[in-house]
Structure formats: structure tokens, C-alpha cells
Image (cartoon, rainbow, N blue to C red):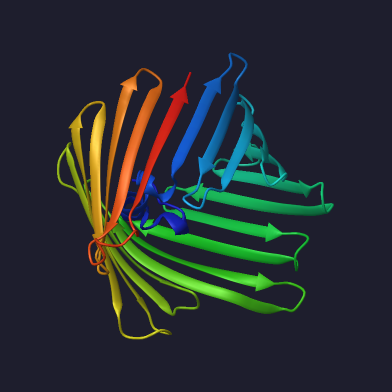
Amino acid sequence: MSVPAFQDISKAANDLLGKDFYHLSAGTIEVKSNTPNNVAFKVNGKSSHEKATSGTIEGKYTDKLNGFTLTQTWNTANILDTKFEMADNITKGLKAEGIFSFLPQSQAKGAKFNLHFKQSNFHGRAFFDLLKGPTANIDAVVGHDGFLAGASAGYNVQTAQITGYSAAVGYLAPSYSTAITATDNLSVFAASYYHKVNSQVEAGAKATWNSKTGNNVGLEVATKYRLDPVSFVKAKINDRGVAAVAYNVLLREGVTLGVGASFDTQKLDQATHKVGTSFTFES
């Protein structure tokens, strides 16, 4: 199995615990389309439970032959982002990215340069913010026979100071994975476990302890059950008694519906519960 990036060492458990729970927004709609000349368009809109709305328009052109990708994004905050990607041009496994942002209202600009280098037993990344600091964030993961070890560090070039560091270890197998991470200068510890029980059932859990805030350990468990080839349900609960459920179904080719809700089981008589829906259209 390939070595993941540092942030993805516990990806399987994090995705099970965090993705496809539609109560986080009151309503979400996403429209995706592809053209014959390798241009993909995506429009996303969200309505929060506080009645705020936001949206993003994205266009992506990919030249698969030359490993070049151009992505242009514009959102309702009036931020324009342009991203250039070049993969496997200099050497196999190396991808370079240039990301440029512009906010017309304030004339604020941003410029970032990123490098990704991936081999069979190594995955390294470097992120440079050219206008702020400048700063650099570097992480790397090495792997052998499913065992993973990684570390990350941030550095401010202007002040010549390390701005943060993290470490992680894990084990990745075809049907299960486990990881221990230490982030925020090795002060926040998390242990996660994911298990694909069979083709229908997935289960996972994550425990988190912040050494700066006390001895309490946060715990969250989740499961996913595939009802049939076009639908699944998910459920999770944490140590504070907040539970969430979700249902996802492919209504027809290219149309997906998601419905979700969360409940505070310790405050069932109060208006703390949330419900959300999501529609995705693809063509």
C-alpha cells in the first residue's frame, strides 16, 4: 500500500468520523460537470444554521499527457484563487504547485509554492507562503510493511523561529488502520482506529487528549452500514452525548441526496438539535 501524506496517516478514521454528516449545514447543493476538452466545473452553495450563505465556483483544466492542471476558484467572499500544478515533469513522483489569491476589495494578495514528493516508501511535502513571513511548513512520512512514522515542522524565515511541530506513527493494513498523532507542539494527542469489517460495515473510533487543558479525554465512535449498492447510513456519538445520524442515497444516475441530524442526548428538551440536507448533481 502507498505511503500517505502526513495529514492522512489517520485519514480512514477521520473520514468515517467527519464525512457525510449533513447536519453541519442547514442545506448544501453541489453541481459538477465535465466537458470533452478536459475541463471540470463545480459549483457549491451552503446555507448555515445561522442563515448565512456561501458559495464557490471552480473551473479545472487538466492536461493528462503533460501532467498540468489549472484550477480557478471564485467564492462569495470575492476571493479569486488560481492554482497551477505540474506533476511528474522533473522527476517521477514530484508535483509542484503555485497558488495565487487576490481579494479585489482590499487589494490583498497571496502567493504560495508547494512541493509534493512521493515514492514507494516515502511521502514528503513542503509548503511555502511567500508573502507572509515568508513561512515554510515541511512534513514527511516513511513507511515499511504497513508501519508508518512521520513528523512536521513550521519555520518563519523572517524571525528564524520554529512555529510548530508534530509527530505521528501508524499502521496501515488493507482492512484496518491505527494511528497515534501528537500535534500543536506535541501537546494534543490523538489515537484512532478504523476497521472495514466487511463489504457492508465500517467502524472507527478516536480518542483525543489536550495536555494543556486538563485530564479529560474526548472520545468519538462511528459506524457506516451500506444498505445496498446505492445507499448507506452512518451514525456516531461522542463522550459528551452528542449523536449524529446520516443517510445517503443515489436517487438516479448523477443525483445524490444526503440527509442528516444531530442530537444532544443530554439536552433533548432544548433546541440544540440540527438537521441538514445535501443535493449533489453530476454530469
